[in-house]
Every structure is written in C-alpha cells, then in structure tokens.
Image 1 (cartoon, rainbow over the protein chains, first blue to last red):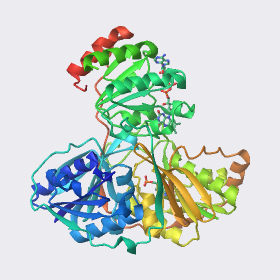
Image 2: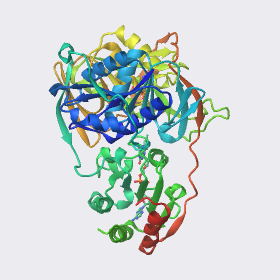
Image 3: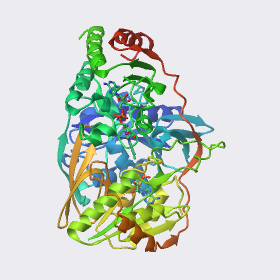
Length: 325
Length: 247
Ligand SMILES: Cc1cc2nc3c(=O)[nH]c(=O)nc-3n(C[C@H](O)[C@H](O)[C@H](O)COP(=O)(O)OP(=O)(O)OC[C@H]3O[C@@H](n4cnc5c(N)ncnc54)[C@H](O)[C@@H]3O)c2cc1C
Ligand SMILES: Nc1ncnc2c1ncn2[C@@H]1O[C@H](COP(=O)(O)O)[C@@H](O)[C@H]1O
C-alpha cells in the first residue's frame, strides 16, 4: 500500500508546508516499506520534481496545464480524486493551508471519509497511527485514528520539519485525465495580494501582535517597525479589529487566526480567553503590558511591565543592535 | 430566491473547556451559542432576501435534538427551521452526508455555512456538502455580490484574496468581515417562540474515524517578569537570544 501527498504550489513554486507534509508521509511510508507518491497540479510545475524527490517522493503524479494556474476547487478536486483512485493509497496527506483545508474534505468525501484535520502530533501504536489535533481553538486536544483506507490527514503548517530523505524510482507520471471534460462551473477572476514582503500570520516563525493598549490606529506603525526588524508577521486583537483600527486579516484568536510561531510578542494585549485560544501553542510568548495583573502575564514566558510607547522603541533599538541591522 | 443556512450549536467562546476524567469528551455543563460563523451566514441570507425576495430556511443537525440555535435564527428573521435529530458530533463526513440528503429534498439557489464550527474546528462540512450536491463552492468568504444568477465571492487566502465567479446553485462558507450579524428584535423573539420547529429523526452512518481520547493542553511554565519599563529590554533580548534561542 502506498502513500500520497498533495503538493500545493503558488506561482509554480511548491510551498514549504507541502514539503513538511511530504516529509512526514515519506518517513511513515519508508518505515513500512511502502512507496511515497506526490500529486502536483498547476502551470509550469515540472521544475519542482527534483525538490519532491529530495524530500522522499518516489513518483510524482502531475498535471501541467495553463488552466491549472489558479486554484479551481472543482477541477483540483477531480484531479486529486483521480490520482487517489489510481494509486490506491493507505493514507493521503495535505498541508492544512487555505487550499488544503478547502480541498481535502472535497476529495475525502468521494471516499466517504472524514479528514483528520490540522494535526500537530502523531504516535504509532500497534499498526495504527493516533493523530493529535487541537479543538476548541487549542483549549483542548483530541486523539483520533482512521478506521478505513484511504485515511485523509492534513498537517498544520510550521509544526513538522521538512526533512531531506532518500527516494527510489524517481518517476513522473502524467495524470490521465482530460480537464476539458469537467464543467468547473466556477473560476478565479482575480487574485489580490496584500501586505507584500511580510510573512503571513499562519506561516510566520515570529509574530508581533498589539492590542488596544496602543490607543489608536495611528500608533500601529510602531508595531510594524518592530515586526520589520525581526522579519515578523503582524497580529492584533478583536477589540482592535472591531474598533476599525486594523483589518480582520490580522486578528489572532478563537474567531481569528490560530498561530503557533516560535516567538509571539504581545503588546498592550490583555490576554482574553478568546485571544489566548489562538496563540497559546506558541513556543515562546513575550508580554508587554502596563498592568502587572493582566492575564497575559500568566502564560507569557517573559514579561515586561511597562508602557508600550516607551518599551517598543527601546526594543527596536536593542534588536537592531543584537541582530546587526 | 431560496436560501438554506446550516447552523450548529457550539460552546460559548468564553467557556473554559474541561476534559472528562475518562477522556471521552468534554464536560457538557457549559454555555452554548449559535456558532459565531453561522451567525454571519444567517445575516447574509437575511440581507440577500431583503434585497431579492425569497425564503430562508435554517437546518441544524443535533444529536440531542436541541433547538435553541434554530430559535435564535427564527428570532433573527429566518422564515422556517428544520431540526435533524441524529448524527455524531465529530464525524464531518456523516454530518455532511446527512445534511446533503436533507438539502437534496428541497429547492435552493444558495446554501450558506459558517467557515468552521468553533468546537471541532473541522472546516470540512461546506466543501463536502457541495461535493455531495455536485455544485460549486467558495469557502472563507468575506464578500458576496449577486447579480441575477451570477455570484461573485471574495475568498480569504494566505496573504491575500481570491475573487471567484460562479452561478447559482452554489455553496458559500462565511468568514468574519462579511457582515455584522443583527440582534434579534423583541418582536422577532416573540414571533420565534410561536413558530413550530419540525424534528426529523434520522439514522446514523458508520463512522470513518475513531476518537480515542481527549487531552488538556500541557500547562505553560509559570510566567516570569523580566523587569519594568525600557530598562528591562536589554535583559529580555538577551534571554530571547541565549536562553530561549528564538532569534
Ligand atoms: C464571540 C467572541 C469571540 C472573540 N474572539 C476573539 C478573537 O478571536 N481574538 C481576540 O483577540 N479577541 C476575541 N474576542 C474579544 C476578547 O474577549 C477581548 O475583548 C479582546 O481580545 C481584547 O483585546 P485587547 O487585549 O486588545 O484589549 P483590552 O482587553 O482592552 O486590553 C488592552 C490591554 O492593554 C494594556 N495597556 C493599555 N495601555 C497600555 C500601554 N500604554 N502600554 C502597555 N499596555 C497598555 C491594558 O493594561 C490592557 O491589558 C472575542 C470575543 C467574543 C465575545
Ligand atoms: N451539526 C451541524 N448542523 C448543521 N450545520 C452544521 C453542523 N456541523 C457543521 N455545520 C455547518 O458546517 C460549517 C462548518 O463546520 P465544520 O466543518 O464542522 O467546521 C458550520 O459553520 C455549519 O454551518
């Protein structure tokens, strides 16, 4: 029995999070002596094959077509379903990105299966794999295992390492499926890219987040300057979004984005339960708040009691000095 | 225009989640609310109806046949509600299949969902229902424009948005930013109390995943105050570099 990993690309480049998923799949496949296959669809994608072999793929099932340049849920689903039918895998992996979370259930439902989604850990136990995933925005974890083949799994980005490993075979197989035969009934009209040059919240290894403590929208440039020194993504609280100071895309928390960076710097954020739900799985948390009793200090590894307007400029200077910028 | 909205009961966001001693699930003596993303779906349905005319139906699948969230939908202005008693909480495929089977028996132009239920955060039911109904779908939507039969929906993705074009019938899942859900009016609440909510009992399906346990998150180490004001900055940065090694 084989393994299959869906590889996501943007602008013809495979995403790092897909290599993380491929690495996990290949590692498990190799321990069972099973082939690890990848499925890659898009436009001008053939330059990525070698990268996939490097991370353990034995064969790549692909479709290279101008019509696949952008994500089309219906066509992508039908292509991946086709690859699953052809390779008859034991497990199918996706990265839990916007695309992966949208696509995996559409594919799995053709096999009458639930997706074991957004996993952050796994353990092998008498021939089965027990997957661990956060629920209630991380207030609790659930342990699951599939009970039929194929089993569909999505992995949270940034949690597993992309690891180079040996691959055999190294063959490419074009998916034998006529895209023209599908009536997609839907198409991408436009893609708008925001905040160029800054990492995206869910993919960042450092996040600088600021809340209502910054007093007004005009002061968020302070947060952004600090983020720029660290190459960090920017986040905020719902209170700030509701006040219209910052866009919703920056909201961290139970009804915003769930993040797990290496370093989360929380400035002028009280640490409401809904905010904590979205970020307590961060590796290291730093809190800066002028109220020594703010709940955020209870979960912060390091805290500074102080005024954001005094502490942020000092932090910018010190980080610049230490990082040699 | 016929719009169906699928809604689920979820724990209130302020709830402390406690794992049962036998790890089979979470303690249920908590406050429940209409899933906040489903509230957006209800609001969007009502707005579309106000503009284009039509009828809005809310459907909820609940193993305990609890109809509180459907009452809330009626109070907000939904025309009719249908409660399906059955299903398992966790299994997205069976939830989607049971909902799709019910939807297939009805006429619809649009089926609206929340982008995710904030209990299991599964994020699966909308794409599954669309696939089972064989209609196109757009998930995580922050803007919907309807023009006759055409639908233009803006979908949030990493670092940007995709604008998708499709036609009715279709499925859309709603993300914050789409609208501001209304509060039920007193009149709406009174009217909703009088409306009947039919209950359909349905058979469950075999499970495709097995839940083997629940775990509370590992507690974080107790917080540590490095110091006060900008004087503490040097020491903080040193700790991040040398102790935590995250720079
Ligand atoms: C259904 C629901 C869902 C929600 N989902 C989310 C969510 O996803 N994400 C989220 O964040 N919230 C969410 N909330 C809101 C949440 O309950 C809080 O209201 C919100 O997180 C508070 O934001 P805040 O910390 O920026 O503001 P506040 O709670 O007002 O905290 C401001 C903090 O700044 C400090 N401060 C003030 N001045 C300074 C200064 N000069 N220097 C340093 N510190 C200063 C104060 O001491 C205080 O601790 C949700 C609420 C509900 C009801
Ligand atoms: N039991 C249910 N009854 C009705 N709708 C549901 C149910 N479960 C999920 N949904 C819908 O599907 C969306 C996504 O849920 P999920 O895939 O479970 O995260 C929710 O926001 C609801 O709109």
